[in-house]
Image 1 (cartoon, rainbow, N blue to C red):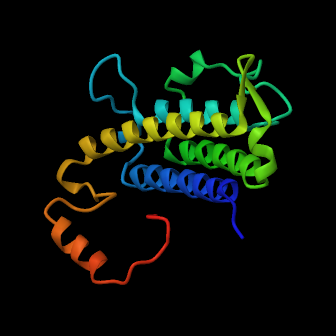
Image 2: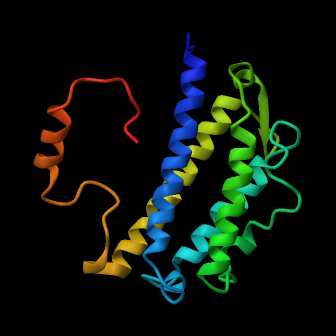
Image 3: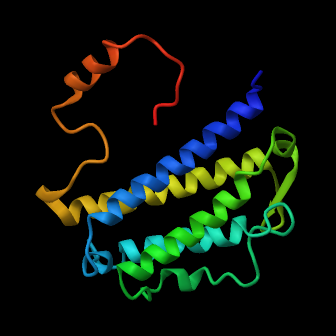
Length: 184
């Protein structure tokens, strides 16, 4: 029998993978030039957002539960410098960071959820630490998707229900029997 804690862990793992897939699909639509394009001055481009998300992931999830999530070696300010050379390098950084994240959360059990994880010397339950990071990454992946959509304009391939397709989408959902499953 599944417990609430087991369900929570299964759900957050699914959500992390879902948000990664939104980032994957957004990045896939861009070329080398577009990952470095700014929509407005003094903002971030896709390469910088990816660099920041990944810097955060590496810091938070390396030695999770063993050391503070804000590592001494992290250069947060450097994450906002546009130094990723091309899309190939961006994808290598992106995939490596997600590998570290999943390497830390996949082995977690219900018993781990009440353990304490520190971020900048502030104690969080593992549940709180996971929720903090899930919110942080989904926020930035939303920015990434927004920038990609703006850059692609009419060539953008939607990541969700296409505009004007809601009725058909809902009809297909309601034509099926009710079932218990994750939306992704």
